[in-house]
Length: 200
Image 1 (cartoon, one colour):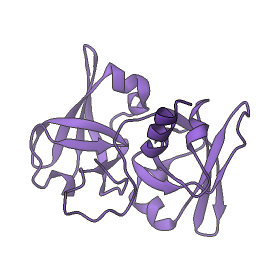
Image 2 (tube, rainbow, N blue to C red):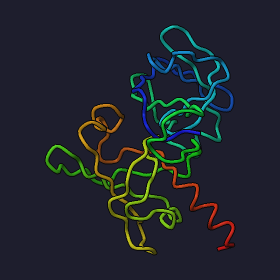
Image 3 (tube, one colour):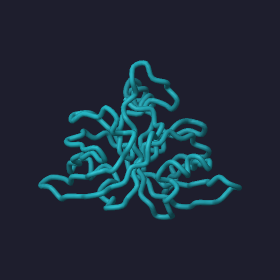
Image 4 (cartoon, one colour):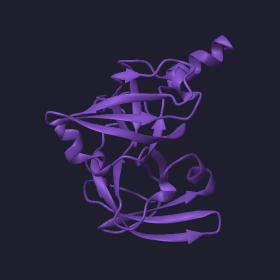
């Protein structure tokens, strides 16, 4: 389990196409501390398994299922990536419950400056909007964020907005996003469980 608190901004140093996916080599520093083959790392919000590591990088394999459900297929050499190791049992819970299971891919529709902060509107796949509420939590590219506005239900192109403070812009991939950027979305898992139990 993760919390959506990005620990480090890594960089793709190599990619390799595979039969049924791709292999990514990611340069990092603090993420490598104590890292072992078989460990999980959230990479832009996608929970992936480490298959190799060195003193300066680690390697993950992204299968076609993950590529189809996320925006990882669009990353290349030099792309920045949000990285987070799983939460330790005695760790501080600063974000919200994040599984690393992407629910859909959103698209950045607009970015507006508000002083030193940025208000970002993201369009979302139809059907995901029912899980998103104003002042609720959402995971965008592995980052736990607060929803500041959300479209009405039933609109043709649903959206939500977040406001990014300067610190978040400095230490995550959001410092380099632009209009049209694709982002990985994970909605609050509690909402999905409630829906399932109620049978709605």
